[in-house]
Amino acid sequence: MAFIEYYKILGVDKSASKSDIKKAYRKLARKYHPDLNPNDKDAELKFKQVNEANEVLSNEEHRKKYDKYGENWQHGEAYEQAQRQQRQSNQQQRYQRTSAFEGFEGFEEGNHSDFFESMFGGGFGNRSGNVKFRGQDFNAQLQLNLKDVYTTEQRVLTVNGKNIRLTIPAGVTNGQIIKIKGKGGEGVNNGPHGDLLIEFNIINNTEFKREEANLYKTVNLDLYKAVLGGEVTVNTFDGKVKLNLKPLTQNGTKVKLKGKGFPKYKKDGQYGDLYITYNVELPKTLSEKEKELFVELSKL
Image (tube, rainbow, N blue to C red; front, side, top):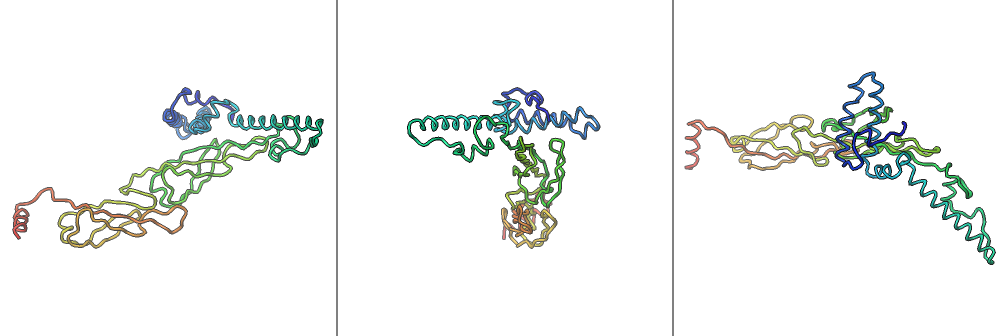
């Protein structure tokens, strides 16, 4: 993809905050999304440019490099490092040759560092065009519902116009980043590809609270059930279970259902626990007969 002015494509200035960039990206990504603009080549190009701009400017390190080096931001630091190594080696070469005239051991052409040889292919002189540079890392966000990551899923992501098949292991957590090796930008001079870094945004629209692999849930009990005990049906993440309730169950009583929590990440067949907290509800209204009975109970 040709170089684009990232700030310009997102419609923000160079002082824009990370939040401003995120808002601008989401607005433009919706506007130019291929699903909303079928067979529109201009919209498709804009969508790719917006994604590229976001991948760079939303990454703090990449943004610093872009602000410093502009179009050559991916390789600017590497070129500077190569130039520094070149200058240091040239100085060493001159020093050793001068020392030879003063009675010291002469400079040998092959006596340079392995690092410098790997950078320039052996020898001295200006060979920076042969330096191999690793490709740019791509950053992407994937939004999923909590139910989507209860089981392992297959998804196809489109990154810079390329479809990437992705296996999402069960138990992925909100904010977790998964690295797909070699799926980033192309390297320079046959250098290795960069990686694709996917950050997961997990939306919890369930009745459960999640902490790692454990789940938490509050179950309401009416006063009579709490006092007399009995059987209560509780929703777990993958179905219903029946629990025996002891008489005189107190408000705030906690019960652990072992193995009824969330899958543990990359640990097949292992689950966290589900913690139930009972909330005893007082009746909102009482019939005359119920009032009489409560009065009678209070006298006992």
